[in-house]
Structures are given as structure tokens and as C-alpha cells.
Length: 583
Image (cartoon, one colour):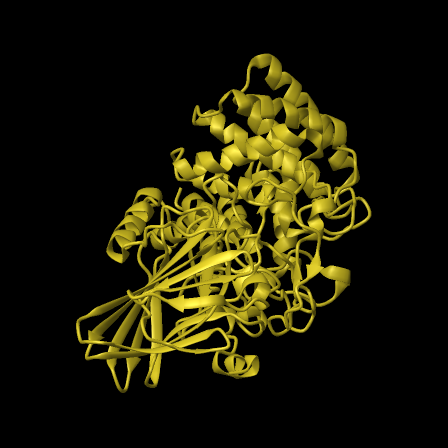
């Protein structure tokens, strides 16, 4: 079978049709045909072993043998996904997918459990695993007496249990499984730099996985959308490694606007995103272990790099790789670039967001000695660099972005509230200095609102956030004028764009930003506009598919998800606004 034959058999779906199963160290993207089309191993930032999402080789499909309709959902508080297929020939079949937890950092374990719910179940299995973005076929492929397949690909070891007899063609395994009514059939895939000598027991692996999820993800009752809030908590947990580094998204190179060629690799830990997620968890009212892991990762990066803190790292704390072509065809409308140019940028706002996060840790009384040292490092960095142009939250050209300065003001004021009198006076004085300069240079002369930078008079939706975290009061005239301008200039159908690029019509070059939609909901709530706040919240939380995963952008005209999936800071924004709007 040629690569073209497989591509036709498993064509790409629209993004809303995909689900993610993850264990913190890596994740697998699976479509409605039971087709696992993306997984990197052993870690998020390593090369893909299933790459068909981006037009390459590599798929692990478990699909009903007869025509079917598809449904599916996550088990509450987990990233365990259950497909539900109704077939003309087989009645009803479920396929339960998960990454085994607790995770092994060197070996991914993918669990698949096929259940014949009504009638006998018939499924077809296609297994095509290839290292290095689909370029290295399986070698040394063999089956033992217990029906387990073992192989090597690139530097990785592979073991697939439960498949039994299979036809082999160019490293691709094909099999037909018959599951009697009421019965179950387990498939267990292990792939990594090593596999354990002991073969996982499926029942034990499932029990351990579900228990780990239940222990890690609490109910979020004090919110306006408890189910979605808990789901977002689970998404953040699934993207966060045991080292505390949270992947910004599970995927790379999914386009932000169809046919515009803009796509990036988000399989890394952004300091800003870590802070957004940590602050969202703090809104839930307790220092959960996940929260402390996020804080710990940020603290270690600050102490290691000081004023030279870079915007993003691998989830292990290493440098983000330089951009390179993978040679993949790409998801329709996107590129094939791995790595990220952000590695060379300076983003001042991250320092302010780090202080906001560390201040929340101090309020929980979990800011340890390293955390207090990190506070001093960050404050010194702001003192040194706040006047330096930076790339800002949107990672574009260097400028004197108002948002970056105001986030530092917010962070300094937050930290002043939990510090000794002497420290508080120093932090407050620095905040006042930055705020005075920003008010002088970045206040729109006619409208009295914040503008993007001294030379860019347009409004930016990101300018809503600093007031919500204490830079200035939410009822300050500058805050209210900014809120009014965002609603006037950046809203379409209750979705919010970042800014208006080059005065072009909204939606011309990119979709609406779901993060900004949740920010506007919070800002309206803080301003007392409750009905409108709920409208924006509901509109933006509904911008998803059956798996309730949110990407970075939403195409308002076509009602499609755009960009990498799922986007961690969007789920953090949903969690935060869900709790804040309940107050």
C-alpha cells in the first residue's frame, strides 16, 4: 500500500472533530474514525511517530468495519476519550482511548479498549508507526507466541500488544478484530527510548490511569460552567509534564488562517502561558499540586536565566529548537515548520505575569525560599529592562508595547500586597514610575484609552487584562475607555480579535482570538455589565467540537477552529472567567 493510499483512507478532518489523549509528557490526537494521527515520542517536543495529521506517514486506526455514525466524549475530569459508533452492521461499538498514567517520561503507553456494547463488534485495525515525522519505517518487526508485536524505528523501541494475527505490508500492520456482544478487546502500544521488560496489564493500567485523573482534577463547583471548567483543568493537567512544564498546545503547524501560510510549533512551555494557567488554577481557591508544579517550573527558569529569561522552553526547561522544515506536506493551509523563532525574543510582559503568579503563591503561603529569590530576580530585571522595546504578547516586531508595561505594573502591585513594608514601598514606587511613563506615552489623546504603543494608536484586546489583575482600577476612566474601544473596534458576533492589523477588515488575515473573548467577558463582569459578560462567555466557550477542545482562534465566518489544538492559555482563560463570573 502506498502512502497515497493511506492518505486517501484517512484524510484530514476539520479540527473540531479531533480529541486529545495525554499524560503530561506527550499526547495523541485522535479523529472520529478512531484514527490516531499525531503523537510525538518520547516527549512533546520530540519528532512525531504518527504524522498523518500533517500529511505524512503514521496512523493507528481502530475503525468499525461497517458504515457508522460517530459520537464521543471525555469521561468527566479526565482526558480519557470514549468513541461511540453506531453501525448498520454491528449495532453499537465503543472505543476508549487514553495515555497510561502515571506517565513514564521515556516511554509513551497508549491504551485502547474496544467494547461491543450492542451486538457483535467488528473493527479494522491499521497500524503504521514511523519515527522522525513518518520517515523511518518499522524494522526488525516480529510477533511472539503471545501475539505481541515488537519492532524498532529510528532510535525508538515499539511494542504492540493485543493485535495478534496481522497482515504486514511495508511495515504497515492490518488486522480485523471481532468482539463478541458485551465483550472487550484491549490494544496497548508502547513506544519510547526503551520499553519495560514487564508487559503492562491492561486492566491494571486502566485502573491506575483513571485513579490518577480523579486524584489530579477536582470539581469546580463555584463557577458558572462547572463541567467546562473542570474539563479545562483536565486539559491543563494533560499538557503539563511531571517537571511542571506545560506544552502550549499538543500540535504544531496547524494554520491560524486557511491558505495564509501562518502556522507555528507550540509544543513548548511558554512562561506567559504557565502564568496564565497557574493564575487560573489559583482562582479555584486552593494550591493544587498542579498549581505548585507550574509555579515550580517558572521559579526554576527565573533563577536559571534571570533578566535573560526567554519566552519559551521545552517542557524539560531546555532551549526551544531553531525552526526547521520537517518535509511534511502540512495540514491543508499550513506549513511544516518545527521549532519556534520565539527563542530569540524578549517579552517584557512575562516578568509582570511571573510576579502575579508568585504573588498568588505568597497568598497561599506556598512561596518557598527559591520563590522569594525569584521575586527579587524578576523585580531587578524589570528595573533593568522596562524601558527596552520588546516583542510583546503577540510576538511581533519590537516596540514599546503598553500592554507589556502595564502587566509589569500589575505584577509589582500584586507583589507589594504580600511583601514586607520596605519591599512593598520599592515595588510600588517602581510600578508608579512605569505607570506614569506609560500614561504619558500610550494614552490615546482623543479617547483617553490605552493605545498599543506610542506610535500605534489602535486598541488591543490584551490591554483589558492588566486592569483585571490590578494595574489600575477596573473603574478607572482609562480602563473603561479601553473596554468601550475593544467592543467598538474588535468585536464581531460576540467574538474578539486581537487588534485591527493595518486597518484591514476584521477576519481578513486571522481569526478571532478565543483568549480575548474570555478577557472581554471578565472585563464586562468587572464593569458590572453582567448580561453582556455572560453572552461573551457563552459564545466563546461554544467555539469547539464534540471533544470541547479550544484552539487559539475561531473563524467567525466559517465557524471553524483555527490554529494549534488544544491551546492551553485558552482553556486557562475559560477556567478563570468561569470562576470570576460566578462571583
